[in-house]
Length: 338
Ligand SMILES: NC(=O)C1=CN([C@@H]2O[C@H](COP(=O)(O)OP(=O)(O)OC[C@H]3O[C@@H](n4cnc5c(N)ncnc54)[C@H](OP(=O)(O)O)[C@@H]3O)[C@@H](O)[C@H]2O)C=CC1
Ligand SMILES: CC(C)(CO)C(=O)C(=O)O
Image (tube, rainbow, N blue to C red; front, side):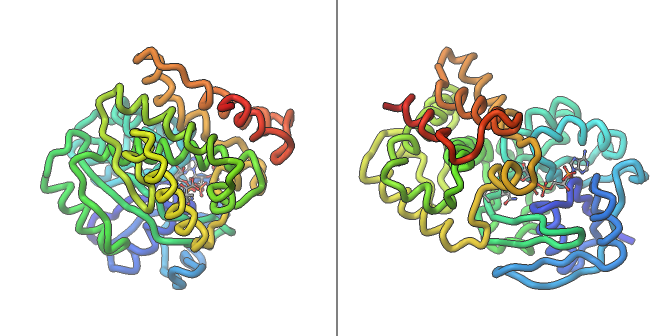
């Protein structure tokens, strides 16, 4: 059998990508911590449901300790706060000439590179929506940007091959020489998504709300200031126009937010993954882990991040049972903007 594509973290994102690759004929090995999910995939296959695609594929799945051998291509799709532990478990199974591709939110490439080395780390950005519904069942909520690129922007044979393979999942997948530009763009847009999780509003309603508009703009601009200081040029996607926010262009920002509202309103994933972790799955989120490298860069550059700092504190208060979503939390962020 050909070498498998290893999907490490076979939840919403890993499961959706892996199922499509398997359907396209690629050998795929799914690795996940959740034993019932692994058992369901082996017994009944992996099912993708929702408005974008409905199909089931036979799936070969194992828990991390059952992985054998060394592999050349690993798509990592665990939450940011699980990256370190996942890398510890997968490093012995990564071939000398292999690579880990971060299909995650955050700047996890930096964590991966520390353990695997920069040469064995590939950058990626994903913005489609998906939810893990039950063992062996994943809801694909909407299509969204999928981007890959070498960390140094080089056009290598392996990045061309990875891009060609991902086109079988997302026909508009982009091969970029500025993958960090996309990741910083998502960090800015992601701050808006994270703030929306302090309310029970859908992402679309949150973005459309006139009351939230000053906060939404201030959050994005706070992150984009750091990107600029780091010398990164953020890139837009799915309606988000970081350049308009960076130059404080009122009409450009309003048009971008209209597009983002429409994009999210059309998705079957109405709320962010962070909200789902807090409100539905009742578990810790990766807000702090996602923002850690961003806040570290801000400290390096001497830039204050009052909104990101308070956002992390408020999400942690919800996680610790000291605050309740929808009860005065977003107003605390609004107050910082005012
Ligand atoms: N869902 C979405 O729509 C989007 C998500 N993202 C990003 O994609 C990444 C993946 O998120 P998502 O797919 O939603 O998360 P999920 O929780 O749905 O999937 C992650 C899976 O990995 C498992 N896992 C955790 N630790 C390990 C480990 N060490 N080894 C193997 N498996 C492990 C999880 O188990 P357990 O549940 O027990 O932790 C879970 O089954 C995140 O960075 C997220 O922010 C980006 C864009 C959209
Ligand atoms: C909203 C979404 C799915 C991006 O479209 C996302 O990134 C998240 O839930 O964290």
